[in-house]
Image (cartoon, rainbow, N blue to C red; front, side):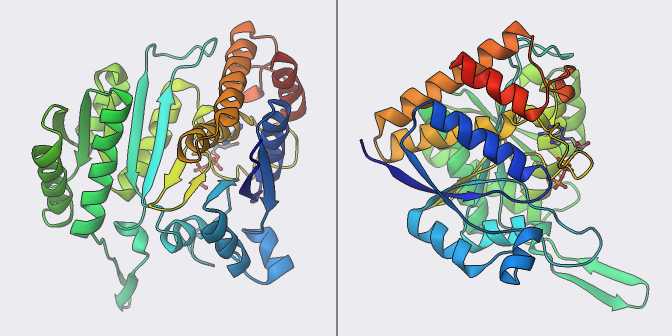
Length: 341
Ligand code: ATP
């Protein structure tokens, strides 16, 4: 059986807890993965003098696939976001975040089945900010035809491969006429040239947020620039049970790194309370990706087993983490998943 090397970044806060749980379940499911632990985040400052050591980026460039825990980012100062630097350094241009109702997790909504495509490399996340005069600061939003086009291609191509029917682009081109205007023009051009069969709409972001909370089932694939994608991802997580249940992938041309939508959750870190499911679901996305990209059927089998196990544990409802209204800690929930495999 081919064993596949995968970089593992435990990260900060709840990262070590949720990634350890994920590796345990993936191992128990029989996936042929060899983890290569690599440093990043606040912990890496102590060990390597850098939040994003070169050794980690080099390992990812070499093995081309990784699982990443959340990494903390200081607010209003301090070092530049590791997540942003990391996505940019590896050109992981598409954040793909499926948001679905889970069996047994009751929320205000049913039949939610969305996939967010967030542009991951530009917009306001270039971090180009200036103090132009005392008391006056600016932040530069960047959009390029190349990046807007390739994220649109990723979203439409996903529709074709997964049998999805509609792309909704969220924007604010009425105000940001050049940047969001370019985003829209690129999306339209991609659709007209290659995907005319996919339904398409453009929704102004404020209206889109209102529509999402009124009836999320009217949407299918959502396409948007970086900042809107960040905000809408958390909003959508709230539709299906919160940040503990939404996985994600950062996909580039030659490299893919899988990570949950949630952050390092410092408020619960180290207490054994985190829900590892979002990280585990990202692990399932990773296994499915490897099954396709490396033609490895053992990865597909393991992914299917894990999905069936968490569907069962959630449907039974006996072992549930606190964010989903239960009392189980990370370890108990993980043991329940392994028993259900
Ligand atoms: P970032 O700014 O790094 O993206 P965030 O705004 O997404 O972070 P989080 O750190 O994810 O914020 O935490 C938001 C809230 O959700 C916190 O109260 C946290 O405890 C909770 N939370 C996040 N992830 C989980 C999880 N896996 N299990 C349980 N609770 C979680």
